[in-house]
Length: 140
Image 1: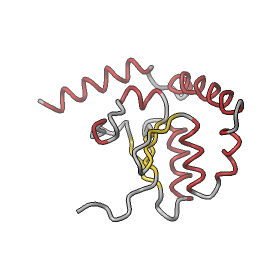
Image 2 (image 1 turned 90 degrees about the horizontal axis):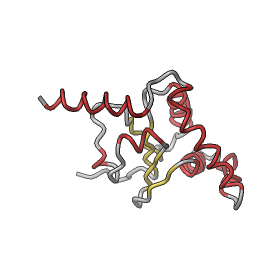
Image 3 (image 1 turned 120 degrees about the vertical axis):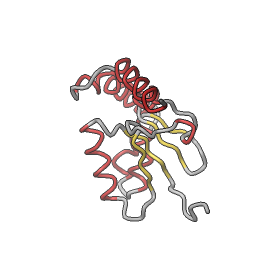
Image 4 (image 1 turned 30 degrees about the horizontal axis):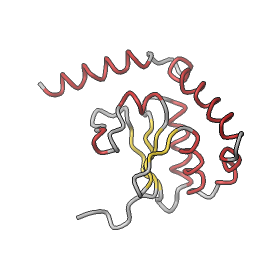
């Protein structure tokens, strides 16, 4: 039986990132209507096939979310939609304005490139190798 009220947004997040967890916990507390679902991409059971084929590598490299209609959102568009759904859309609304959106997404891209290093985690290649090993050992 399918969920009678699917989430309006499914946010893919890195459960191993302390800053990501802080943001997710904030959104969960504010999402009283249950409009957002949260999927930990760092969990052993994360399956790209269940999430529009978004690979572990892609999801770890940049934030992704899926709308109820199946549209894939990336970067600041994810936060803009999540904050809209919790009633704080005005905070991120300017990030969708022409010109400002390019600047904000550029800044987010720089953050995304440095996120793992800044939070004391291995680089993306190492995380992917570790993930591959974990997946192989789980299949044996």
